[in-house]
Length: 593
Image (tube, rainbow, N blue to C red; front, side):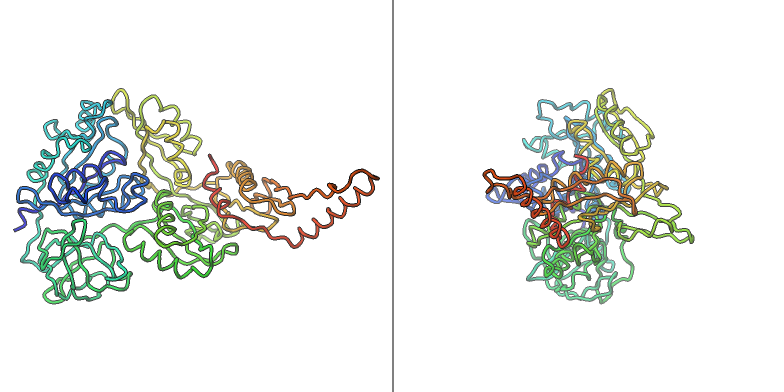
């Protein structure tokens, strides 16, 4: 019964043509009419279209030669690798896409290893063979040398021109095994995604592994123990297509009047109340956020709206973490955890666009392990929570293994950049005469602050990177505080290596002078470690020309007016408070520009 079903995904590095290939597959199988067809049809968010990247995994069902093909589209950026792992858990096979002009990149290899760990059947495809700069033999050689494919396994295609699409569909049918589940066993369905609909509640996307899911069944989520009636089930095209049953091996959706967002966990197992099972399917590994940042509503009354918006985003973004926090400078807000800076930026833009919220974001931080003199250890994700330095024995920060794929001519520039970022050189491996893979061990705090942008800059966009955690190591770190008009602004504090503190302090003060508007009085901006000021800049006061009305006369008259102005400025400074714009908080991010 399941022999005519194939579940597969497309994995590749960012911008290697995943979304375009998905478009051609949908077009070739006539899943979408020409009238409804548009470029990157599975990239439904405005943000995805603007940036040319896939952020959300999308599922869609196609039919070809009597077979049902369920495609789950995946992102390619390293920050969204958790979306890829969710897609892989719902598939039996994967199309591995490599750009003919660029060859294997860092994320290609990372996603391929992830697919092999899930025991998926991989079909290698060299894409963009129509480009003038395409080097098909080079791309084939890399696939054979680096991953170990046979030459006759590799397919050639141009998703843009529609070349090789029929061969890819045939390969999916012939090479990818059918689902192994049985319709005779109790229902086990894996939830691989979900989103919130204002009218219908939570819509859960499921892959039925065993058994049959029928409309009207009473179902139970094993993780939360909650029971619901399956009001509507069906399959996924661009719209939801209602069906009466979903059998083992099929991918579809479930609407069960789930109103509470927290009840529908991605990775949970759904079974029937009657004749069900208590055995949960292996879900997804718990995501650990790498970067933390505070989100505060500009308007304090929007606090509850921000909480509701974060809950809705968390529903289809399993890697988003948040908890309430307060700041002396910014009031009530949330401490949020992300997988990287792009993830942070996308989440912030989604909150602003989809929920019309005005936000202030604090500078991003990683988690530090602080060992105290009394032998206790603390995990700190916010500089404000750092204990007094007299109580600290040592501080450990997370280190990552960073793999950088680059053309050989940029090796020297990359090594210089990595050394500036406190990187520890491990290895250089030449894939061929033109490309190399350099491995470094680097502190996460250096990786997340602009390393990716600087890497692209020094290699003219040709290098790519992937990173994975390797544990914590002791470091000589300090908390750098920023004082504006002698008042500590907790939201601008950040952790930095002691040697780099004077540089960062000076840069930060210079940035803030540019961003904070002039006041009627002069405003000192200081960077301090503990009670010691290590850098200072001053925003000069706005100055009215009080001598404009003097057309001559005695100098004492002019001096009298200037003295009077000076006294007024002093009094103003005693009672003056400085308004800090959102750009000032973003200045921390752009400190190396």
